[in-house]
Image (cartoon, rainbow over all chains, first blue to last red; front, side, top):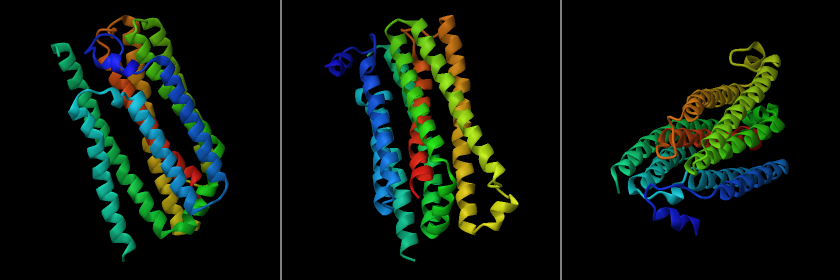
Length: 103
Length: 199
């Protein structure tokens, strides 16, 4: 596949996926946006929160992996930075939530 | 690994570190929003109904599209087509202006309804709605500043691509500007459901 070809060439030519893949990712992002707007329109309250944030997580993963080339990154330090930032945020949010809702 | 690849990787580490700090910055605001929402569910519900979902969706589509164009701009440059790359970067800048114009319409409408910080109308509403609109202006405003900075950065990159100082062999400035721009898109991906969709 395209991905393996680029991985074996250190700095020669294109670094990421092909231009057609970008357009496909864009299509997926638009579809997910339409889905999340449709789900929000139904007024499911609690379920809508989970679905909307879940779709936002999927969309940002697509952006990170394909548009931002994280899927094709070879350096471990760069691969690790995002999980570290997200884990830090999860600790902040988790601890604050557990404090606020148990008062 | 040669020296150029090492320098390129160093530049990428720098921008990813910056992106991490931005995620913590906006993450703190998300946390604040969640906690206030938890404490004032009724007021936040009323506040979010005031927002224009159509304009919010339009802006989401605009930002996703200019994320695509900047990615295509980098791909075009790496494939040795600087002219095509410049067109894609220019399209990205145009989209960014489009986003800000829609945002300006939105904010103007809110201002007309007296829904801005410290406005008499807003102050007469419950405390929770004041929190909601405070966070709305703070978070979308901070994001808007990021869009403005993005326009500036991408404009410099456009000039540099046209002048030939960013080349297929040395695309790091454009690559990093692109990464920053995708971050701006990603933040909006979360702001959109938080303010416009969850009621």
